[in-house]
Amino acid sequence: MNGSGRSDAVTRACALAVAAVGLALTAYVEFAMTSTAAQDRFGWFVYEAGAWLLLLFVGPFLPVGRTVLAGALLALGFEAFAFYRVFVAESSSDAAAVYLWKPLAQLALIAAAWFAGYLTYLRAQRNPGHG
Image 1 (tube, one colour):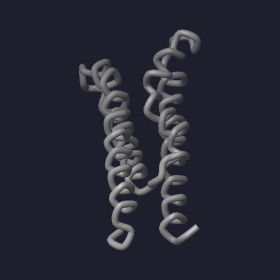
Image 2: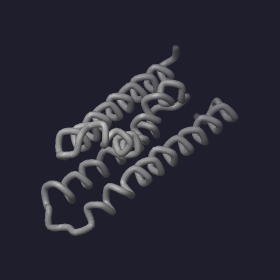
Image 3: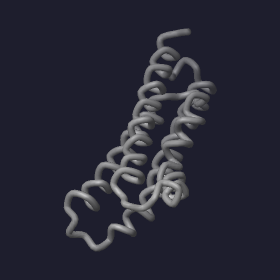
């Protein structure tokens, strides 16, 4: 494995670690911060954690890591912003809307990062000397 491949493996592993943190935070919000029974929250958990689950299951097979890590960090930042907006600031009346649209925005961020990474990968394959 060359230096670039090793670098991609490390950044891909970091992206998977970020996804695991995001999944843990989502589980905490869905199961520990609500008074509803866990069996009633499981569907919402799968919806809220969809981007993280996709990244965890597909991430190891992606050929590039840097853009995936950038997308995962942006999605984690959005997760932290949503948590702050809903649970810390508590003055917003749009809490339901934030948690309804957050997974879709995270999925879009991660998908855009995958697409950018794939385009970078294709360019590097087409022009190996220009990287």
